[in-house]
Image (cartoon, rainbow, N blue to C red):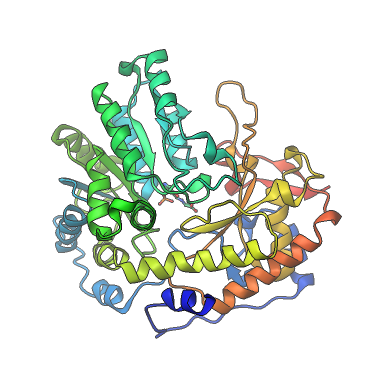
Length: 461
Ligand code: F0G
């Protein structure tokens, strides 16, 4: 019954402060996107109506978090807020040691530099852009060991974030365990469509890794959202709290990199969390070079406080139900309209299948880049390409990677938009879908060397 479903995820908050949105005309948007080189990352935020570019750092903080900002202890060393954050990380995630960083990639840089020696391999359940780049810059080679189902946008597997244990084992046999720096486990898997990994799989990965003396590094960026899926989809966890599930998930790893800008409801912040005292010693030493002293890691005291308080709020069932319920609501409406999206609906975003929107475009006409630009022109909604542009080039051959998934991500900031914004979004996607046959694609006219999707420029074909 639709009415019952709606009640189950009604927002568990009321609005106390608002930020007016800016409206633009279609003609203005045509000009803005041309000037931005048909890259939504290059639009100015004042040119955007509903901003679904990312759920990273775009969250609305609560009054409790804002109050925490006022008790920021802005000491260079030993800030009170560092100890509070450390205590919350230990309590919720269960790791012994904390190294704060300015955001997730700061932690990725440090762990990659410590654990990867040139020539080593780093398997993972699908790549993430910054994670893989730090592994490569440290001399490693990323190997995708996610289940095949993850590469098929229509496959309804409930845990498309799972590792294919056979692929992991084959890699161990092929290169030898001593050539494997560690395995990275993302939860949920962003590039697969926000798809969760199951507890059963996590446990099995951990045991195979341990048997071979391989470390497990957990990307905990959206781990609470993953824990929510485990609660809903894995029978034996139905009655466990999200906090208990999160704790168990983390227990199957040696370390975690974290972008607090997602799950933790803040605008900036991250950390590296560890169990091994030797690696901690090294990380604590290295953070001083790249981020800041080991008790602030590039963050103000107030930022650490907001993140510590965010941990408590983000782990509440009410919050996760409403957050994931909002994404589900949009997804279900799009499915009803016959629009091709990645199934099942993921945790943080809806992923439109651009190959199915534009079968007339081969991948070098950048279907997803094109679709994101079309959506912007239609309504001022900003989405993100997650296809061939994001995948980049093979560092050995210099060729484009041609990912199977050519997607546009509609990413939902936490606690920011209302159901009416969701409805406007659905209507705009539907309009663009109905006009799909008139579209000719793009050509790339400028390509940066690293993480090209951020700054690449295109022209209309
Ligand atoms: N890991 C995952 C799974 C991520 O999604 C991100 C960031 C990072 C690591 C890096 O964290 O941005 O704090 O340095 N994802 C953002 C996104 C950028 O839009 O999906 P960061």
